[in-house]
Image (cartoon, rainbow, N blue to C red; front, side, top):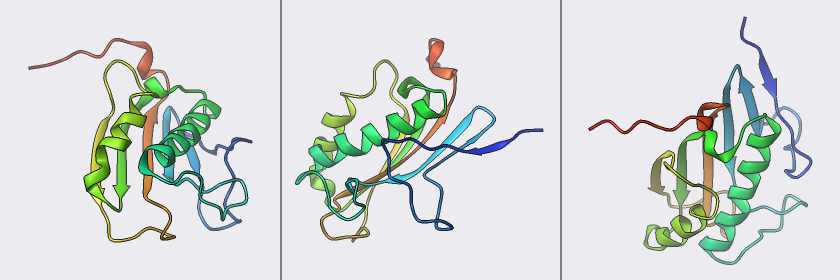
Length: 140
């Protein structure tokens, strides 16, 4: 039987009860909900641009994946929502500070708005604990 566990990190503010889970671990699969650059108070947005907000978000993802027993090398898929796709290189620049080797599969989508006008991006991630320990095989 595969168990579902809610994962928490002291570094990532939890939502109010019965809204959503920031992170779930099901067996070795880790699902991280869309993270934004909201601060510890849940209201203030940290970072004025896409680069700064992306660093905040990738830090939250790292904290949650590590709390689940994994590492950023275990992240296999991300979906990134941005409000201005013209600034996507700022997100890629921040991403390079958190990943090495083979980067996760990724989808980038421009959306008309996120939860607050100051939120410029939201990123969700999927990881498989332990998969980053092996060398990925490239198939042509």
